[in-house]
Image 1 (cartoon, one colour):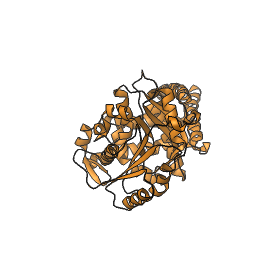
Image 2 (tube, rainbow, N blue to C red):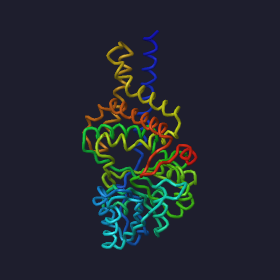
Image 3 (cartoon, rainbow, N blue to C red):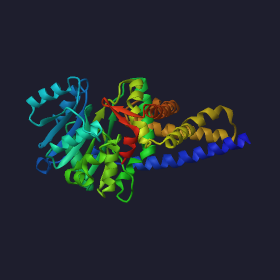
Image 4 (cartoon, helix red, strand yellow):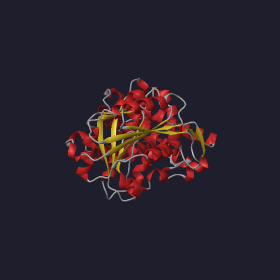
Length: 385
């Protein structure tokens, strides 16, 4: 009986991976690249506002900010919201603004009730902006000079009013490469981002590194006031676009948008504490299902492989090998060594711990701590979009 149950489970996992592999392969191949878009001529370039919120970013801002101010684009401004920083972020921005009139700085001294720090800061930045198009990014992201010309051209080509770009994560340590390879595949599986390109689909996506939206569309969506208490505000900005009937799209940026997310595996685990349970809508049942599901499809085949025979061993090999093929694709896209595709089972174990850890800490604290402020769980639940 145990043999039959194991074989049936492996058969289910194999079927899952066959369907998933086909879906991801077709989906990823359908996503365009900004490199395929012909850069706009000066006369065709609308005015753009680049908006970001930073709190205590003195370590990363000096490298990222110059890339925002060195774009090969004729008409743009950068609005930086200094969100209650305790380090030298404010002085760095002030000095940069004195040297470049395109940079405007909004200094935020306090946070009003009913707001998370980041959405509030982005709202304040928007209110000081003038662009026909708005680009939301983060204080540690790097842009290449021709990014805006190509991104606007791509949006115009597809008639998109909201565009999310997937960039390249900068990874340096073994742990960073391992977890980002897994995270890349898990993101594709969990969000199916290419669905956002289909106007008939309810699928949506959004990332913090680069989201561009036409100003009129952003105002139709309700601005960041709709995301005031939404922890995963970047993803939910994409949802607001779809809910408002706005044409939304995703594309690949490659190295044109890059970011070093967290330094080291430990910081990556700690840095996602506030996010992962929020992405599960603060539902324990959903977190448990995600943990068990990931262990089933990524870890179980490898564990079972030495103990099964015949058809069961073939199924175990297939259900272990197919995600490895997908992992190779992720590694190539991330410009890292394909050997990291073999670490997916390890990545799954770490990732499930990150999910569980986020839920445990959030429940234990009764909320999350973000940017130096504590937010009660019940208030966060009411703010879910």
